Image (cartoon, rainbow, N blue to C red; front, side, top):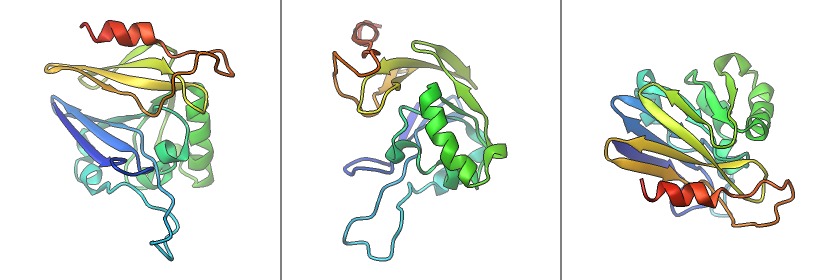
Length: 180
């Protein structure tokens, strides 16, 4: 099991993490970052995805935690280089789809909606989507059972017992996962 963060650590934006198990790679999110005042002339900052393009033959999917630009905004730039399916909630995929369609890249991906608590298989990996609340509805934590134990990527979250859409974080499932 290899976990490689390509952005998003120590900064707000560019969220992207590669999880590799048994030769298969899945990305969690592919976001962008808006430049700070110390970056004149720069419009957007993307994760360094040279690692991804160099290993595109092992890339099986991008799984999305939620629909904020810092988690999905870089997808059109990635899809110019690689063709890969996307998985996430309906709302998250809808937000990502708008950017991808604007870029004329709908033919480079498929949009695969997952239900709350659903587990999918991508390549050699099982991937579970656990509902989590955030300031945008329909977020998910992403869980990867691996030979070395569970890997959970929370995405961004806040514990909100009264979310506007009524969909609460599944803390019971997260608690149960901590004992497996």
